[in-house]
Length: 358
Image (cartoon, rainbow, N blue to C red; front, side):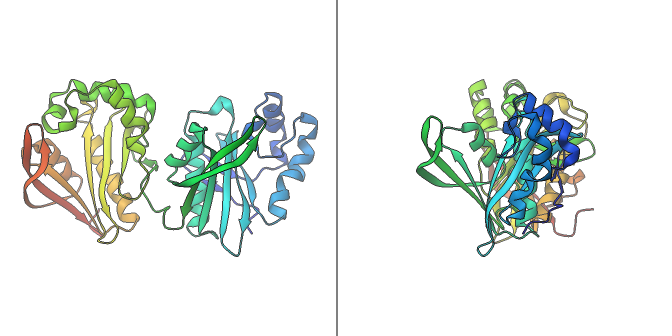
């Protein structure tokens, strides 16, 4: 059974059980018609809130089948997340969530999913968490993908709502799957590394289209369009799995999108992985590339990789300087190892091994 006091802190949220002290907020949520941000079974009228907080919201836990948790940020309940249908002999459960309409579009749902699954699949009691979403609910499907869930299949006609039956997409996350870089937020002193979002597309386009340095080293930058930027920010940057991930670099003070750092060619069997980065023209010479590289490298080593490497074109001296300042050791030259506009270039290999990060 889950701990009735289960409390999980993520970067922006606290996930914790509902209690009598939430009465005023829950009444307000009910009055505003935002019950979708409360667990199933929440009262439809304010008069039932007190009884629900003292008894009803805890029935799932008392039955031994799960637990309901509030998503709270800054003292405000912005939604709820639940584990249910727990089968303890098999160590599996299903997860569901809801975010109040007035707080959507801020990434709270995937952050809550990641925080909860990290706890219950890591040191927690489960080996598998399942998530189901209507096949036509693209927003919920994107949340599952951003949280690192693996799409497993479609159950035909398995859901039923007021308008009739719906096909359900089934996502699963196993113990071990959770140790992935996909979908994470990493916080540093001056920057935050976060998943890409549609709103980044215009800044990505502005950074890539007119910058001679990016055009010099990135063959994919030629003829870059807004359509390609949107496709990247909403689909390719979120490709699920353990082979890699891409993070947007965001100044901690809320400044403009500052660039990207990517994780590539992750090989769990060999224990090595490659990273790369680029910085927007307006964000250069502020140390963001060095901090982003160190942040993601430390995270990869924490995830169990033994070696993190960088492969940089021999003529790209600015990027090589970043690698050295980030603590990477120069190893040698790889012939014709990287594509560049117009062909291929020799590359310098840099690496950091487990135990070498200062």
